[in-house]
Length: 455
Image 1 (cartoon, rainbow, N blue to C red):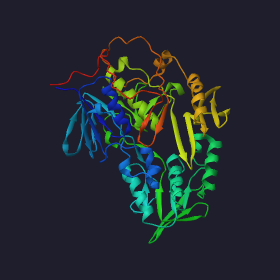
Image 2: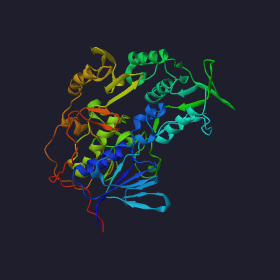
Image 3: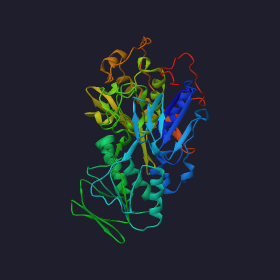
Image 4: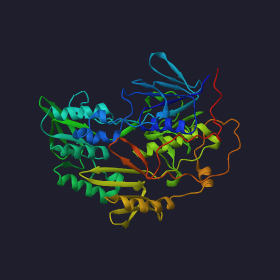
C-alpha cells in the first residue's frame, strides 16, 4: 500500500509543507483536507487590495509547484483525530488513514461578547468570502464603517476603507494602534498617521451596548461616545482552529503543543505548522508560544515537513527569527524578532529601533527602511544565536514513552532561513532574494522515518 501523508489545512502552511515533502523526495500520496471551498489564495491581500477593489478575488490564487500533485478535499472540515488508529475523521463517517500527518488549520476569528453576530451588517475578516462580503457591504451602504480592534488586520482594514473615501472609526481598548506588536513609539506614529488621514479613533474605551436600528447600528462606548455604523468589522484577534482536535488527547491550550522540531507532543508521526502551532523557539528563551505571521507560516511548514520525514531522532530544531510587515497609506512598517520581549529600546539607524532584553537584541522595527532592516537583521540573528547542546537540554519532550530510536546524526547548527521579500502581483508567497527558480530537491540520502504502510 502506498504511503500517505494527510495535511489538514489548505492554506499557506498546508501547501508549502506539501511542496517541501515533494522536494525532499516523498513520492507517496498527499491528501490536503481544506475546510474552505477555495483553492489556496494570497491572504495578506484580503485586508487591502480586495477591500479597495484593486484586486478581484479571482486574482488571488496562490502559486503552487506542479510537483505537489496532491489530492484536494476542498470544502471538507475535519471533525476528529485518532492517533492510535492513525485516522482523521471527516463528514459522513469517513475515516482517512494516514502514515504521516501535518496539522495546519490556522486560526479562527475571535468572538467578542455582546456583538450581534447574526446581524448581516456585522462582519469579520478571516477568509476570502469574508473579504468579498465586506467589499459588497461597502458598495451597498453609505455612512461610517466602524472597525473594532487596532491590531494589524484592524489597522489595515481602516486604511483600506479610507483609501476608497469612506468614513471609518476604529475602537481600541489601548492607547495606540499596533502598540503591542511594534512598541509605543511606532504605535503612536501609526496612530497619528491614521488620524491625519481622517480616521476617527476611540482609544482606551470599552463597548457597553449595541443597539440595532433599521438604518445602522449604534455602538455605545464607555467614555460616553456613540458611534453610528452602516457596517461593522470585528478585528479583535484570533484563536487557534483546534475544535476538531477535541478528544484527541493532544494538548490544545492556545494551539497545538509541539516540540522544538514541530513534532506534536503526545503523538507519533504528527507535526504542526503555522498559526495553529505552539512550540519553544530557543532563540527567544524557549517559551512555548505561537507566531501569527505570513513568512513564519512558510518557514515552519517547510521545517515541519522535513522533520516529519526524517523522524524525531534525526529532526533539527526550528529556531527562526520571526519577521512581519504591514503597509498603510504607502508607509511600510517592518519587524523582526519579537519586539514585545524588549524591556528597553536603542536606535539602530535612521528609521530602525532595536528592542533589548538582558543586554541583547531581541527584536527591531523599521519605518520605510528595508535596506537597514536587512543590514541590522544579521546582528539580530547573531545575538539570538544559540548552540545545539542548549537546545537539546531545553526542548519540550514527548509525553509518551518513546520507542527504540536510531542513533542520531552528528549535531548541526540550527538553520537560519534566508530573508524573504513578498511579491504582489503576481500573488505568491515571498521567496529568498536572488534564489533560482524552485526545483525539486531530492534527498535520496535520507531514510524516511514514517512507519511501514499497513496492508
